[in-house]
Image (tube, rainbow, N blue to C red; front, side, top):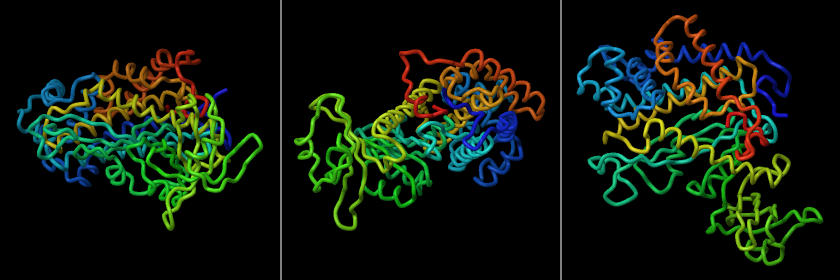
Length: 443
């Protein structure tokens, strides 16, 4: 039986209070006081005229919720309907500032921080041994050809940006992201986004991040890393788990080791390996699964056997695909696979605005689960997005209003509809159950 969001290892807690705290933080994040604080921090929009920071933020949020492409035309149409006429040039210039990108990024991080602190969620099952499990990946974004000089793409003659984003499977929130010109490698961008590892957190990466320094840094910080093994990495097998127990080996190469063991389909390998030489030598764990005799998938990790079994490591890596589903939501909802402006600051501001709106939807999902005392994993993320989109205008009206009672009533109405339409008591057999088995409650 899955662990609900109403129960922690140490005992029960009052989820009604948590739900009220999340509800309060959602409205507070869009209050003039918080907006003015963010403006002062980032230096954005010092002159309060028609296109104020709060109005622009609410416009981007509404555009995302109603499924509009984030172009200046569609955004301005929503702005005019809600706040009155504004000329095209001043409207666009509000986004084409470095401070605009900083403002929307700060608003996103502020909302995530406040919701996570108020919700008090914890992982359950095998993943409950970690503080959180965070997935990082990059995605490309095309921009108009006139942006080639500032935002060159990987392909000659193309223009584009590369986004690296971080996603938490404990909360289901897209926590943060960073943007730069499109490149093949994603590690330099990730280092700017996450300067240091967080102790007790498991990080999932794809091969675009593969390097030895990443594993060494994680071990030094008390964090954990899990990713696929790159074929160019030269590891030495020092020990393995066999039918007779744990057995040491004399530092064989991986190729030589495979000549001495069975590779039949379904075989699971659990090895102790070393990678590097001299002061760069690092001890790691290598887990493999034989899909067939000639095809073995290898997973390199710092997670010890006392925390996850070999099969749980393999299943855990499959959770990395959750961020690909999240990218699909963003791109299909707001067409974020391409930008309609070549201005780098506007590209960043609008994308951070879309991420902010997506976090708002996922936060409403958390609030509904806590308020109704049901497991968060039973509210399907994509179905929750569709439900909240139906309340797009009412939601933005509630954020723009200073009335707490009206906001509470709206949250109650949306929560009831979410439970009625987005709740899934038992997943169908066609859907993967790995997230539920491992305790990824926000996935």
